[in-house]
Every structure is written in C-alpha cells, then in structure tokens.
Image (cartoon, rainbow, N blue to C red; front, side, top):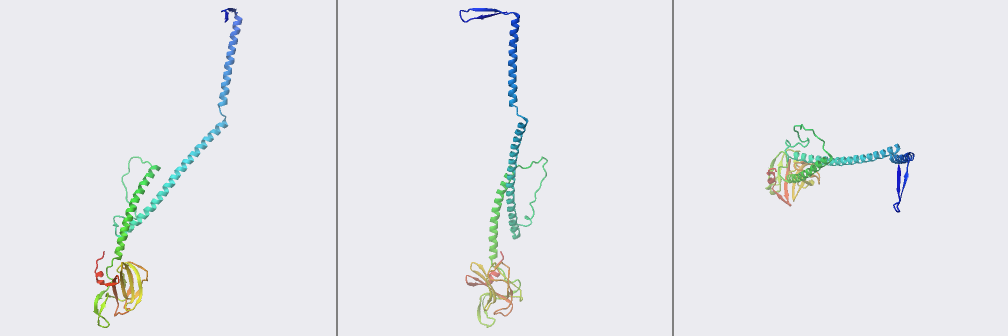
Length: 311
C-alpha cells in the first residue's frame, strides 16, 4: 500500500510505501481508538442516567408530599361541602319555622270561620301521591336543592304576604264585630220598662227614664252587648251596683242594680262576657237590669240596639 502526501507549495508530493505489517498496525490503532471513544461515551451516558435517577428515600418523600397535597385538597372539598350542608340546614330550619307560623295562622282562620274546616286541616300534612316512575331516580345535587329552596322561599314570601293581608282584614272585621253593639244584656228575661217618659214606680209622677229595664231571675247573668273597656265598676246613687263599659267612639253602655259585679275598672271586655249578676240594688222594686246606651254624652234608646240583627 502506498500513501501519497501532496504539499501546499509547488504541488510537490511524496510517496510512502506501507507494507502489510504497518497497515495492520494502523488498522488496530484506529479500532482501538474507536473502542475507547465508544466506552467513554457509554460511561458518560450511564453516569448521567445514574445522576438523574432518584433514590428510594427520595421517591418515598416525593409520594408522601403528593399524598399530603391530595389529602389537604380533599379536606378542603369536604369542608366546602359541609359548609354548604350547614347553610342549607339553616335555611331549611328557617323555612320550617315560617311554615309553622303559616299553619298557626291558617288554623286561626279555620277557627274563626273564614276558612272551611272540612276543606283545610292545618294540623295534618298536605295529601299528595301518584304512580311511581319506572325510570331510575337520581338524588338531587346541591345546586338543584339550593335552586328549589330559593323557589320555595319566594312562594312562601308571597303566601305570607297574602295571609298577612287576610289576617289584617280578619282582625279588622273581628274588631268591628266585637264593637258592634247589638242584642240584649241578659240571657233570659223580659222588657219590664221602656225608654222615655213613664210613671215613676215610687212617686207615680211623670219622669224621664234614660234606659230600659229587663227583668229576670235574681242572680242570673248580665252580659256585655259589645266589646270594650270597663270604665266604672262600683256603687252609684240610684243605680245601686253599676258597671259602665266604654266601647270607643263616644259610645258607652251602663248596667245597673247588679247583685254582684264580676269585673274591675280597666278590664278588656269581649262581647257576651259576664259583667255582673242580676239583682235589685239601688232604687229598684225587684230583680232586673237597668240598661242604658250613651253616645257622646247623650242617651239613646237601647231598644234600637237590642233589636239589631247580628253581623
């Protein structure tokens, strides 16, 4: 084998002749260089790989850190869900209390006769039902429950407003009925002396009678003909034991000659309540009640109110 070397100057060249031994030696040298280079690259690659691979303790620490992060995230989610459940529980408790008030108000309407008791029974849950759906049922989600509660609260607010208005109308009507003066101040008896001029039972002279006399059984009940407040409950000259009721708007009723008084000044009186027992105290000839109606300081004929139709 010949090796030709060409120089840069003047294109001169030299020729070296290589025999078989030298050629073989060169091949071995080049092969050795290649093997050394390959081994060096392998060693570097293995070293780098070993440098990047974590140890067992590092792997355990890394997984524990990730597990801790996941536990913290799960605890946060659980707390969030619990907070939502607590909020829904508070709202449901408030709704339950409002429903109890609505039931109580409805029961008042039933007892007052404004609502038919055979149509509405507020002491029992509402009757519901229907065939069961063949499809599988899913539980409501928290957002769906929140939306349903919001809708229920809106409906309850509307119903509460309507019932409050109805309650106001009912209360006003009941108050007007209570203050509406009508009927007799006794449960049993008869008219023994009318309103106006009459012959005085003691002197026989023509005198003015400012009320009516209703005779009955001694000790029988004397009742109020309207609601009001007791303004007088004591003995008075000529009247004997007297009860006076102020009904407002300048209207006053008097019940005289009572055997015993059952109320006191300042008592709030309902229509039909027993005020006293019939007797013959004061200027009287026998058991009866002297009944007067006074409006703005002037007497009126009680028979007008006795003959009134009930409202």
